[in-house]
Length: 123
Image (tube, rainbow, N blue to C red; front, side, top):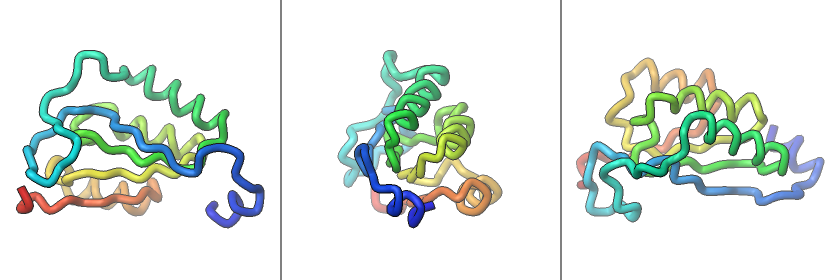
């Protein structure tokens, strides 16, 4: 996919960062997002999917998704799958504490996503 995109040429931002939620189950000292509780005005599932549709139409190549902790959202796997269907490379920043071993495997291999785990002991 990367080589194909490079051959076609890029006509939109190569990389976009999306803090999908402020909700987080940890309070790490090193975290720059000042997360904790979700904000009342965070996007709904429908709004998240519509944003991905729009980014795809604009030919955005990659979205780095963080927060807070993205996997706290009960709809997050649906959002990741939608990004995949739209041809958007999704990279996720997560502390990994809310994922079980099976979910980590699915993210790494079946959805072909990049998973960056933060060290929970670094708090």
